[in-house]
Image (tube, rainbow, N blue to C red):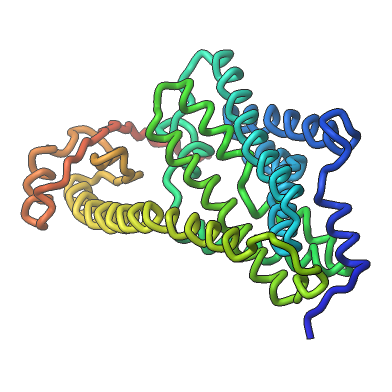
Length: 324
């Protein structure tokens, strides 16, 4: 049977509840690590460096108050619930503000069209929610069982908390508020998933049986988290449907474009989506194929409603005979 004892509860609360006031050792450690993680993640996003962003995920302490919120709900600990909730909100706002300020030092816009780190975080789907639920469950299990607590660094890497907040600030500064909303949705999705799966896991470990009866309305807190989870599912489902439709459309356009290019001895090197438009990049020898023919081919294939733009890159070929 999955159970924990009083020693496990003491270990969990000692690791997650940040006591000692704003100038206490635990509090200052949280804020120093969060600010440094925010700077690292922002630099990683600007430089489009996956390794740097992963490093920031490991350093970031934002998972602590989120899991602390889970434990506080299960233990019916209202003071620590308020404290952890405020830390999550204040920490998130701090990272957004920090990245927005650092964005002013960059002479170019940091947006999804030119940065893969941004593009990965501005259009979350239901797949992101599923991954976050599983990651939150792993984090809760690692919290409840001291023998597997060494998996927590992996959990920090798997869940994306600080990087989406950095994207929110950078895209706001770059004048792309719709992308900021998408990145914020990813952050809220991850937080809601951690809370929901964490409470379920700790419930399976029967943590609440060790708590004396109080006037804390645990059911109300759990309901609120459930409502938050349902609210994020709606835009995620819309994004998933839109993403699936875009993927199918790209595949159809690529098939038609490749056939069109083959007839002229050209090759399609990339087909990508930018908003409602499909971008087709092709290369080959002169003369370039007629783009009007491609438009007609798309229409004949039932893609008349697809707006497309073609980038043609002429290539020259020279023979290099072998010596001797």
